[in-house]
Image (cartoon, rainbow, N blue to C red; front, side, top):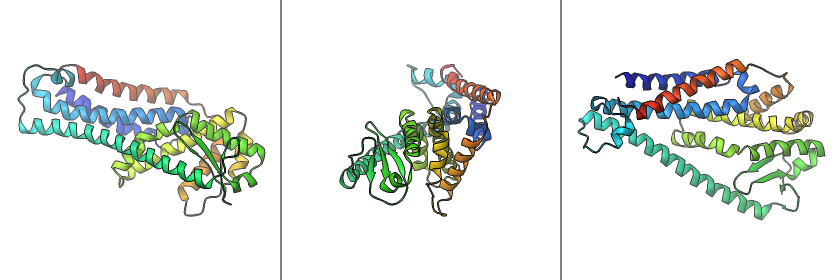
Length: 286
């Protein structure tokens, strides 16, 4: 039962660490490290939950997960043990299914989006696909051949330097493959659409990735133009999430450097320790 408690502790620890990462001031200053931590936390929670169920099922056999799967002798399991194994396999199957269905859905959505852009947009601009609309909007359609899309209203209202700053931000998304960083959380959101915790986590990841792209624009020397460009993007009052995101991004661009490497290092150490604990117990006999 020792391994069962270890898996349970790793699961609870990863959930506790998510509270130490969510919405904290240091994550705004170190968004890239925070995104990596979120991925490690989700991986650790999933591995620990599966390990917990499998170890409960195999505990009386004295086998770890991998040794049990490779055992030559037949495994004689009771009904509760079989239920535990089936639950673990079900979680794996659901996770794989969500990843696959989300990937297919996203690929089809992007294909439709590109087809629509081919019909309505002006592709003569050297860097942008321009959509005729008076609103101010610039975004990226990611993928193998990413496109940066801007409305004609954005080109009219943004100065040349502001447009360069916004393009630097969008290239930060493209170069950082932020679409892939969003992917696991989008899949979880699709699988559990009513979960407020998952919705909040996905929104947090989206904000952190926006901050990562802002940091890339700042690295290229566009801090001030990016700030003034944000003034042209005016979400409506009902888009509270977008308004809040713009406010946080502005505050971060105006803030002094935030240095707390000890906090980041401690959290990395904790989550990696929990992750390695669960993974090692997959191999060792129970």
